[in-house]
Image 1 (cartoon, rainbow, N blue to C red):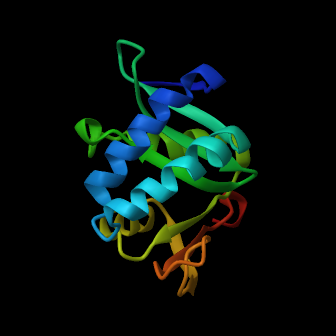
Image 2 (image 1 turned 135 degrees about the horizontal axis):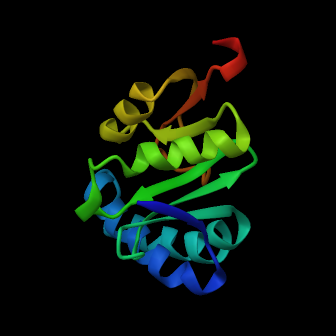
Image 3 (image 1 turned 90 degrees about the vertical axis):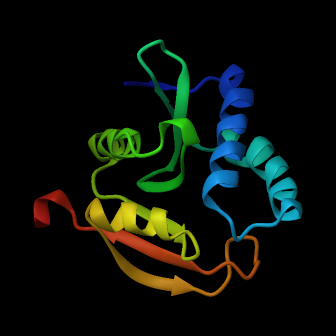
Length: 149
């Protein structure tokens, strides 16, 4: 696996990975929820974040991560690549770039919560609504600064 910086021409394939990953992991979202989030991801998240792509041995994108300073705003892996270490590789890359990280994760996505907790994050807070004001509770997670460990 290797990581490279995303370019605008990568966005359609990243949007497809986002949709596949969300459909496989966010069973609390309705079809209407997913369809309303697609343009937000396409028009705001992908162009507005520092986006890194995880590629397989054939250099095909299998995941991506969007950063806003030291906050992981998006980390999505194609379902065919779930549980193969790609998420951890992406977090390690982000730590090298940004130091201690923060992330908000949907409380209703137990696999994502478990992933972040197993990778050194701790719950620092909770919001009953997501960033769009919808009733999808978020857990706010932080990791200790490497120098504090």
